[in-house]
Length: 97
Image (cartoon, rainbow, N blue to C red; front, top):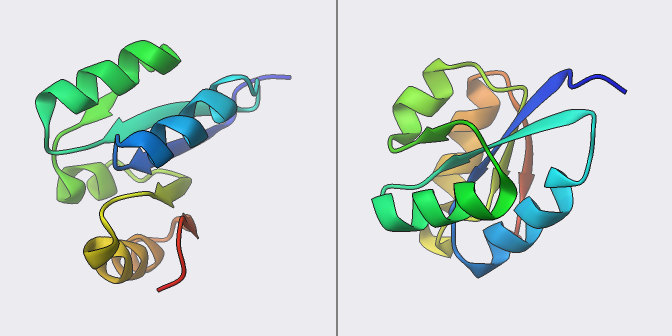
């Protein structure tokens, strides 16, 4: 199965990394990361073998991902979810808003 969808995981903490490890096993998605902490971003990319990371939520949205998985700190969930939806991405928010 060819890679045909880009999913960006926003938040490279423990929950985001768990999702990333599972998604990296799939052949139909390409996992990318978004986090403002350079160390967390690099570690998450290394864990999943991701080739692309974003250190800015705005620039990540400008790249037009197909899907966004929101696993950022809970106080950012509503804003990240709404903005990703407005940008045209499918969204999974880790916790209820």
